[in-house]
Length: 457
Ligand SMILES: [Zn+2]
Ligand SMILES: [Zn+2]
Image (cartoon, rainbow, N blue to C red):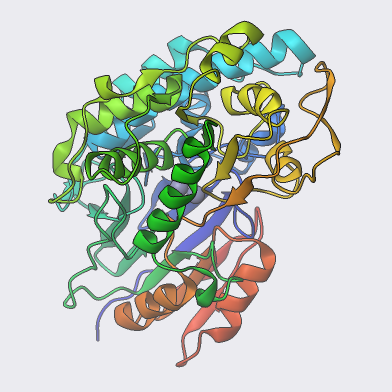
């Protein structure tokens, strides 16, 4: 009989939501964290995972990718536990460096403007320490997680954003696979995930559930979206307007810039200037440094091809930017107040000839959602300290470019890996519930709320 070691799983963040994703694994006497993010919709210390649930220092934190809901709390974790060692791919560590320094700056600005208690949660020095103490491991390289060889780790290409990886953790009596965020199909720059080899026996699978509540039919294919998107851009430019594309700094920005550039190179879009904003550009440079992590046929355009959005806090600059037809890809994707996309949109919605095209998930509680659903003649506020503006723009649309696997592909993963235990994480409650209800074949299935430990054998 094969020896089975029990594994304990406790979400210290995330669990039944897309929050401060962080999962404590206790196995063979070792304590490991999978991811350590900050909650995208909370502020101050409430945005952190609940570190009080960690009675001792975890030996390691394995980071699936550099979106802040997966890595944003690593500097705070290392402030509390200096000895914990972060591991990830070199590309993820490169992007994480940009993302976390940016988080410090953003938290500093918010603290000055609104005096949020506890902000900034950590400093630039804390970020430096976190990045310097991290160990870079290449995809498919086996590494000893705790030094003594009891736990062996391996990172597998996850297809989501640059450097993203699923995490395989193997102990003598238990093999665990954590998908992180996964995409099974090709995007413009990223190739779809590499499935785990058939021979690998997985006892426990921890799987993301982002699209558990979405019908697959809602998501037409990536390249069809790209066609529709560029056609609509072309129509706006022909009318003499400009197009704003609010986009997440990591992943969506680099994808959209390269889609636009490809259509321009093929003569299907006019060669107007294309601009990108600061953090998206910084991450773009990391994409440039790690071509091996991109789709083998991806043709990454040089960053110098894209202009810099510049200081959008000055209204004159925004008006200049919009004076000639142009395409502007700017953070943030959901148009958080005071970000470049929000400040440009504030000006843009007052001009009927422009186009404003969302390309990712837009949470109903965000400014982006209000703008997306704004009707001509409505009055909108782009921030507590901003004047009210009247919307004259009608050309506001939403395109669905996804970096997450649809729910049918999530189920394919489960059936292929054939694990004894499945834990659903990283989804809204209805998404998690759908995944849970549809999973059968005698598997034991779990979705554990924050702080609740489950024991698996
Ligand atoms: Zn992600
Ligand atoms: Zn995520």
